[in-house]
Length: 140
Image (tube, rainbow, N blue to C red; front, side):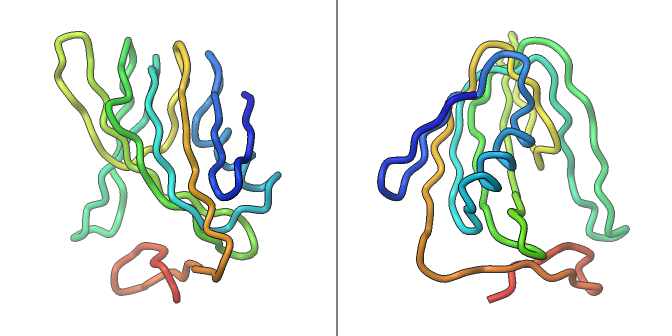
C-alpha cells in the first residue's frame, strides 16, 4: 500500500493481496484521521459483505469468492473511543456483470484498489451505540 496526502485529500493505492478495510483503518490511525469521506474502485478476489436485519438487530453476511470489480465503495470515517471508525458499503460485479452489494466487512485486492479519502479537518463526529436501533450511530 502506498499513499500521499494533498491538502485535505488522501490518495491511496492498496495492492494485490492486501485487505481493504484493515488498510484503510491503518492509514486513518497513522494519519490521525477521525472524520472523512471515502470512495474507491478496483478489483477483489474475496469479499465478505453484510446486511443489517433491523428486526433482529444483527448483521447477516455472505462471502464472495472469484473475480469481482469494485463498482463502488463508499463510506465514512468517524471516531469512536478515540479510534477511527469506518462505515463502508460496496457494490461488486462478477464476470456476468451481476452485482452484489452491502456493508463491507472485508475484501482482498486481486489487482489494485484506488482510494480517495476526503479529510474533514474541522470538527468531530463520534459514534454511540443505540439500544433501540442496535447500531453505533453518529453522535454530533
